Length: 567
Ligand code: ASP
Image: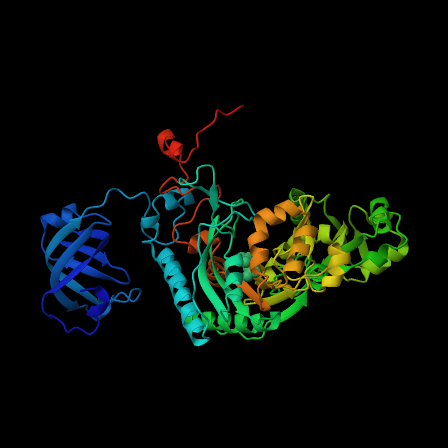
């Protein structure tokens, strides 16, 4: 019997057999109390005589007990637990399996190092707060499948041993034993396969897909993650967005009992960068960035003058809050760590302006800044797209106590096709995304926009998608403008361009990060808290110690061997 089936049993009911873990043991002289826990409940067991066996029972032993059901006296009811009004008077106890001394307590709110929790993840998952996270994840999967069935979208799987065609991050590679020297890659996403389904004539597709990207783990990144991947034949951005809104609304309701309004608001990439300094703004903070470049049109502040002459901007945030010098220094440190030259600021108090640069302000500058009112003006000067990231952090830090307790969804679209990453041109989404205007793209790819849209939830990029290229010539053109040689295109994407060449319908799709979605709804500090067996920041699994070295003879079967480290 499981504990939750006890509800409704009569006092003194027949002998009951229960299985579970010992949650704790309390010895009160002649009486011993054990809290017995199973998957979803716990109940107090009472041993009314000194029993030898109870003396040896410790936390997390798995036991079987037989006893009689008893209603507790009214004044002894423990209102904190579901079965606090009943107990079992024990007649016999059998130890099914003992437990070694625990590395941490099985309780909520422990401050054990995460690497220890991950090493003993099977114990960590016994803790109620972790168990609830995993149940929420499971409910999310269930609600996804329910809505997909309602929408008549086909669940189809795709291979995970594929050709290496990096989409931005580095691939995880798998050596082939049968073709020595050759490698498969693990998919960064099912992107090309889901497009192949459209070429194969399927009307739509979805998959709860594992994706693999060999990049540094961060708070909301893992080398292996799970996404809800979708594609619609005859699709357009509007059709995809409408479906995603219905799907997300359904997941919130069914899996989390939360109501969210649709449709979601949409802003363009440029609006987002101008108002928030980022393409994933948290709209639960209402304050936006102001462009105060005009205030400094005649400025004598040398670095600002130079930046404005170089078409740069002066971007500011204003708060009526009076921040201390220490708080200002902390903001300065935060953005300097990200690469800023430092925080610019002016303080206005009773029509007086202070701050490191206040003395060299022109009278009209003083006047215009004082007009903001009493409070603090912080600013960054430079290229809008470069200083945006500092303004984004400042906005989040300064107004962190003004984050509204709501759920804020936002579509961001009209992205530039290419962006510069570490000095090289990268598609802002992936190279299968259709340019907004092929002619503009042909002549001026750097100025061209992409039919790419992101979904942002509370400042977190929840998902991305795009209209796809369905014309083989345009696909080739994009790869060329990306900088690939004819040979590279043939070698890496020739098969895909060939597949596009047999009557491919227009199609569009999307992918939602499921780990991020669940972590955000449950307000968890990291996506690792909603993934049953995540990797550490360095990509390690402390439980199994993967990745691990392979012995030389096994390697030889793949025609591989270790080489001496040259250093
Ligand atoms: N394949 C893309 C990704 O995983 C999403 C999409 O465009 O559908 O980021």
